[in-house]
Length: 86
Image (tube, rainbow, N blue to C red; front, side, top):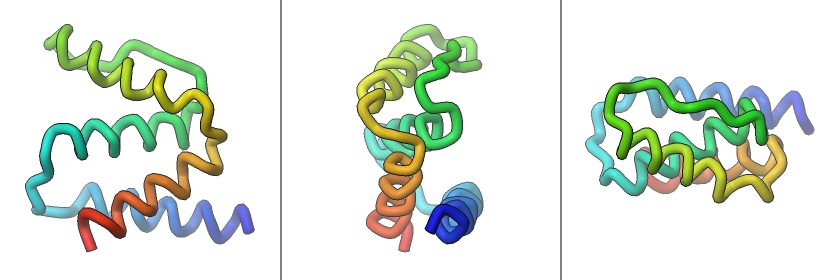
């Protein structure tokens, strides 16, 4: 199951990275947070970027997903791709 989930997650990430669909900022923030939780878990790091307010929103969105395992976050990321991009 984990291998299948990892493959689906990588495919969803690749699809999301290559889309030309313009998403609302809150949806983009959800993509960011689920991706970070799926790949980093609760190993928080300050987001890169020069805009402090934006970085704060990103970090806060990620913190809010701390209750999810990396596996759960991967599935939620896949669900976001299917909902908003397919």
